[in-house]
Length: 285
Image 1 (cartoon, one colour):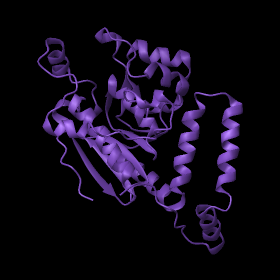
Image 2 (image 1 turned 180 degrees about the vertical axis):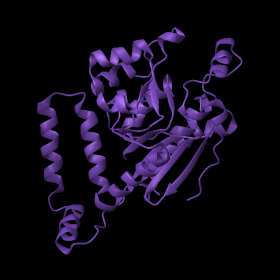
Image 3 (image 1 turned 60 degrees about the horizontal axis):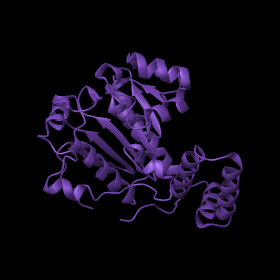
Image 4 (image 1 turned 60 degrees about the vertical axis):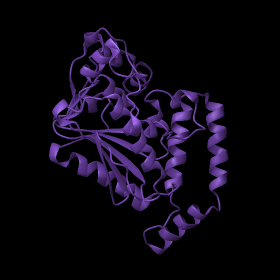
């Protein structure tokens, strides 16, 4: 499958893992409108690719992303830059609409759509993760930190509010008081502290971060049914919006639907025969 030529990120597939790398290292990978469009397009490409079981997002150089592109923000304020960052190629990228359309509408707006991507997504936080890029990390399914990786809100330092749903997702990860501390103080939260407050899923040495994130996804690809991963992810995010009875009813319905399914039969056979399973792939291509 041929990949489009991106201007602001790198896209590659390693085994069963798509790696998306923000690639504006001289700008500390500051998020331009163009980069946001390309990220969405890259995630859709990975979601549609049957080779891909999961996705790793990281940054080139010393930062994951230093937040919004300040030059572009100044241009937006003056009217010299379009609000959607589109050009002839960018308009085509805007057609991307990744994620599970059956998810609650809240997961189809802004950057929250990352949570609706039907494959596991890991943010490999290799450096500064500031402002709007904090939202990118929060809506990924897991956050692996390098030793030099940190998050920082910076919103009140710029006269801004908690953007892109950070005020909804962050308290669900770390609690209300810790979320307010992170958002209000704008201090740097490094891996060890982030792990203690349950913001970081894992912490690795800087030179092992991306390889460990890729290995995690590859392990899922080797041992887990992609359709099961998709269903579980959807359950977890949908359940954040509904009462327990509705969640339990769906869990039972989905469970009964797996009995006798090809993936269940293959999983049992692989276990009995002591071999690697060959599950049904997920994607369009």
